[in-house]
Image 1 (cartoon, rainbow, N blue to C red):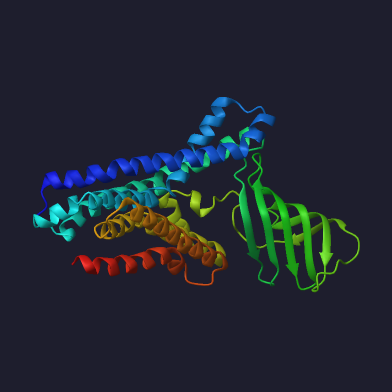
Image 2: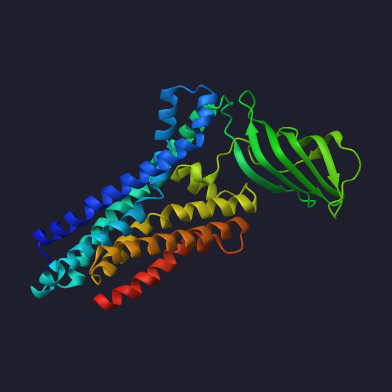
Length: 351
């Protein structure tokens, strides 16, 4: 059994690097975010305290992208230093097997998976809500619970699409629409602005352009056009990624939503459990690779390869979910499945 002194020695090598990695990436992300909006903050004469609040409420979102990759950096680089200085060889000579040392990093990975699970399901949804409110205040926009990119379908085959849905504060049953497209058997109608009346079950489009099936413009634009809209979705419903876990579970099992929204809710729900496992997988994979390398340079190369590969599969899963080309569970668990297989292959040599 691995002694406590050796366990602490291994963690002492990896944990400081992990903290440095997290802090460094966090600072870079905050600086990038601030630099991208500093011109707008200056033009709007935004209060300094409100800017700090806005940035602070963005930290949980940044952390969700940092916890696992920082593990892939810290563990192999730390073990690479031990390998370079022949300290791992000394432990092997004393009869300490790599597989016995692996459990130290399994425990560390489980701890960070728990931290990410809490951040993703408890801290981040509440912070995202505050972030939207503070961002609206910074740009002098009404905090209306805006929803992005929504599509619906009536029973008659009419497709309704809005780039942005912004419910009014004074009446949540009425929402302003922006970037509106309505596709009917008679043609496609587009408008920059519109209004959704959830009581009357209508969408009204303003300055409406009509095109035929070939995309050819048909006549001059109409001042106003009204369409019957049957969907029962409440205008002020939050997007799945901003819901606390209990509300998301309820949304995913709801029967009163469109198939598109049920898919999105279930995909987001599965992601809430699959994403935190990335920390455990990165810790185990990083340790398994780290025991076989002899320099920090090789560990750093592995860091880049592992992080890039994980986010590539994560992005592919997100894109697949957007088109609903595969079951929601497969899209959500794709990077976890791939890295579990890769980790199992690497672990075979430690057995």
